[in-house]
Image 1: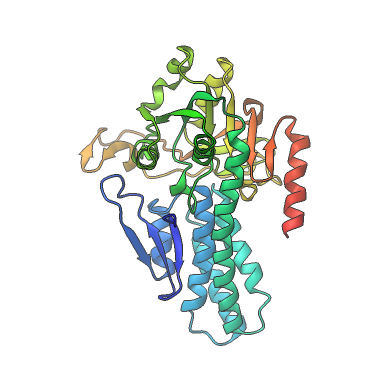
Image 2 (image 1 turned 90 degrees about the horizontal axis):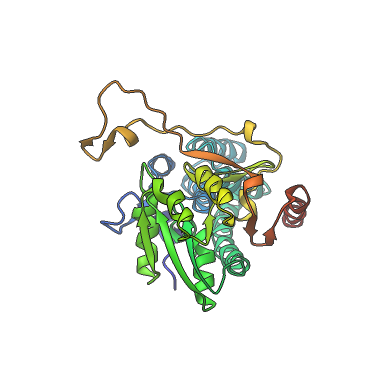
Length: 349
């Protein structure tokens, strides 16, 4: 049985998750018993990655539901709704978080009693988690077909098992390609300022026995010019009808890959699509200055310096060669292929 990044503890009615801020030095599973602690864990990036945030949002609603002492149905839903709003505000750019929250709230709203609502919330949250694993494996199966028999792939940030229930999206395509017998080597960007590439991607790939090499973010274009990278695969936190939002630094890799004629692929589930919006409609999260001015207790910058610390950037779709999803590989023109996403959403709703 695989280790899950985040899961529901039915016996204790709480959430268990891997604290990703402790990796790679310590591998610890935390127990979360209230919404405030979950919101704090999400803000601190103890739980992170778009699909994992979708699961966290779903399980957060379930947690608020089972911990509520309200017996009046309307007041119960008001309380659970406030919990959902609190969680929703923790990470404004990643769409999966709100998607998971809304999915469980909609399902629970069909209940005619508090006890029924609690049972529905827990069942739906678990369904979100279970579907994520199936989604990632289907996505990986479609994605591996894009890999040559022997290749070196660049990835940025962490879109692996730690960003999902297990398996991963971008790293899921890599795992699936290796499972299919392909000779795949990985180059992982460190992904400053919080080093999700060096701390998380390298940790989980090494644990799987995958050949991975760590590089500074700023050397990726040079390696492309030297012919050391065959393709780029990244995840996504939100896909609008004109751009892919992902960890800051993704856009520059896409520009460099386009210049050097290297395929640039995005791997993301349908739940990450937000096709009713454009890039201009999305709030890009800005994080605390300390992430740039300090490394632990070590000061890296003088007091008083201005800091601009965007967590994400937006890559225009004309730089994306394909988007790998659980319903297949979407290719330009995206105005046409995105219709498949809408059809899938209608089928599942």
